[in-house]
Image (cartoon, rainbow, N blue to C red):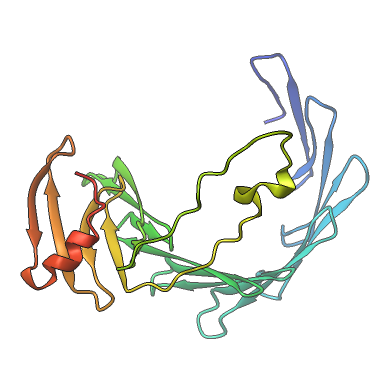
Length: 255
């Protein structure tokens, strides 16, 4: 391709080396990108219209070792000596480790930046079937010909905490506002609440809509369980007799 004109009549042009590799690209905004190659056809550098360069370094077998962008920041690539596959990348202070299955498909990617770690996992059934991280799960469904039929995104729901205190909680008295208002003397503004001890801690296990499905205690035992109709009405509830009194006190649940 030598030139392309889009629907707004903007033209991008390309020129090539004698070996058929791209030599220069000029887009509609007159932004220029020049390409430099080695004798093996590996891209060594890109140069823009400001003469800034992005460079690429390779090992003797042609694997990318280092990539330096136009901004001068570098990414380093490390490989597994047993398989020759990519093992990790280092981008500034961020390190990313990758793992592959025996046929070369990515199955896990873990990124670390300081004390923060994020892991993504991938599963296959011939095609990519699922990707998960700490917050969500993506699933893809294909027909026998590998055509994508459906995609589902399920957010991981974390349990909601509820604390129970058997004694009444003392509330602030209703202030009386007379005369000129002074925020520095407002008892509601100047009051510092104190954390009170709790007697029971329970967890609501909710679905993706936030509807409570179960109530569990600190040991993980189920004290209460509910099933709902499609429109959210409670169809069936199960209450463990040995926890009835406790659950009644923790009864701030959606009906």
